[in-house]
Image 1 (cartoon, rainbow, N blue to C red):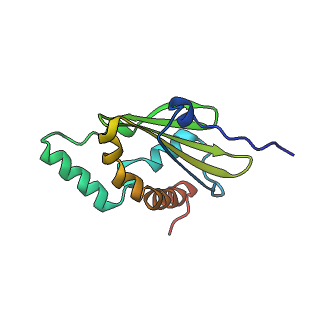
Image 2 (image 1 turned 45 degrees about the vertical axis):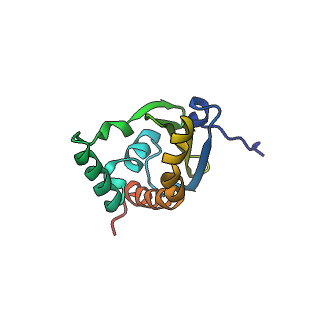
Length: 150
C-alpha cells in the first residue's frame, strides 16, 4: 500500500501561507494529464464566470489600464504539477494545479500570503467566494479537458 503524501509547488513557494484551500476532483477519462494544460484551461480569463470577467474589465477601465491577462500564466512546471504565481501589492497568491494520472485525480492548491492588514481585508471577498468559484471553474475545466461535447 502506498503511504499517503501531499506536496504542492504552491506550498513550496509560499512556505508560511496565511490562507490555503485545496480542491480534489476526478480526472475525466481521455483527458490530458498535462498539468500546464489544466492550469491554462482552469485559470484562463474565459474560465471565469461572466460577471467576474466583466467586473475585472470594468475595474481595468476605471483605472485606465488594460486588463493584464498575462498575470495568470504558468510560471513553473515540476513533475505532475504546474504553478501559477501572482504577486500583487497587498497579497501574493500561488495556485498549484496537479494531475495524478495513476489515481485519476486533479488537485488545485491555493496559497495566499497577506501583506499587512490591507491584504487581509482586500482578500475577504476572494476568500468568501473562492470555494464556490473554484468548484465551478474545475467543473468547467473537466468538461473542456474531457473532450466530451454537451
